[in-house]
Length: 242
Image (cartoon, rainbow, N blue to C red; front, side, top):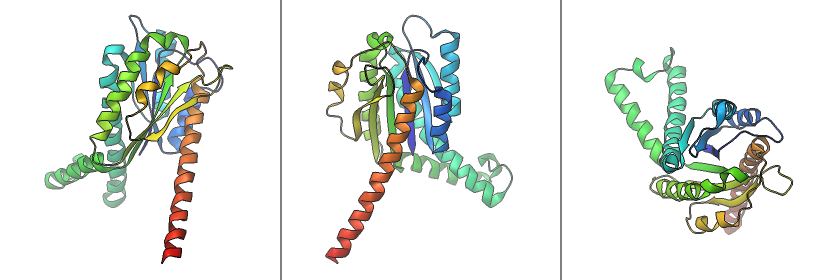
């Protein structure tokens, strides 16, 4: 399962519409969740609307939270999205087999309990990748410590799962020109090094959310290609050994 978790505090102002980019992610099987970080104020009507639209287009959830609520919200959204993704897949399968809506409520109680147990088990054992996309515009500077804590807690939460869980970290804008994103941490299940990411960030004024999302989508594509090539190489080596 693949997720992008966008943490931001304002409106995009450079490049591609982030709602379009989020829809592209969802079309490729990547769920996009968005957390709007408040700091004694609000994001404004436009900012809140954009965050909701990005999440909706990406098949995910959106929340507006204070820095104190950030860590708990990030963990909740990640795990809830895993369960929802599995439920949707199960519902689709039930619909193809049984017809109707495919809703769990349509099953007899004993069958329903069995399906719920399977969903819970898959939620803990399925392979999960989460790409964190952090808004590093100037207004986020006072909130970076809370973001760092949220990432650390999310890593601990993911490590407690039975299935393989990996995290990648991006921030945006990624360069002095104010477009795209920078990769801070490649796919990892290792906590070491996460704390060292944020002191090196140069906070800038622009918020290129759309281009940043598109870059994370491309990273998922490239990662899939690397895995396929790695599998082919393993098969070739085993063939030589055999």
